[in-house]
Amino acid sequence: MRIKNKGNKIAAFFSFYLPHFLIFFGLIFLVSFSFLDIFASGKLQTIIITYLSIIAITFTLASVLFSYSSACEKEEKENNKLFGELFLLVGLFLIMAFLVNYVVFEMHSFLNTRNLLLFRVLDYVSYLFFGIGQAFLLFAAIYFSSGLKHLERILFFKVKNNKFIDFDKL
Image 1 (cartoon, rainbow, N blue to C red):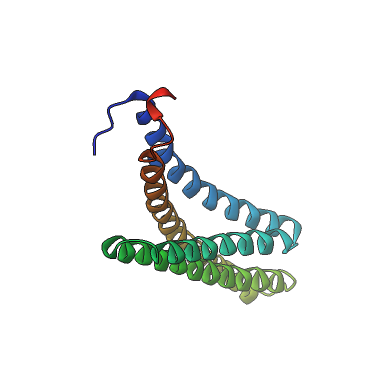
Image 2: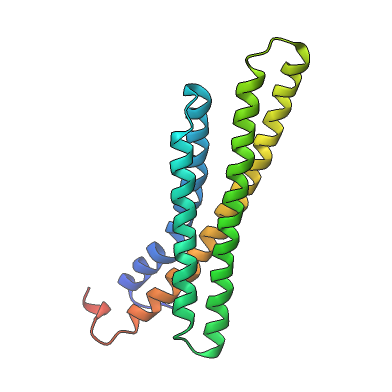
């Protein structure tokens, strides 16, 4: 679909392209910086709050898409259910990333208290597991941004086709 009006092109840019990049990088930076804070301060509160908030948001978006799909036509219903399942997958990836990174933090704090060479080597191995947790987070951020793209596309065209809002005068 080609958008002719300049105002609609700007709205489409801010609706379709910009938020996904911002959310993708925002999720990566949010969790990465909170892990740097954990390794610096040794407190788990920030990462627990961050992960649980993101997991709650993804499960909420999944339930929104499942609820919305019951009011749609057959083809759109299947598509919305698919993206609802995608948000559930994102939630599971975030849970796996949280568990792996929690184990890494506990392993790192345990191994730093010992001065044996074997424990120092195992401490470096713990960073490998931290990378695995970050891979789960990367997949979650990719799927989360694509699910949001679908949700925004639905809402943009529903509002765009609303007869009470005249976008040409905006």
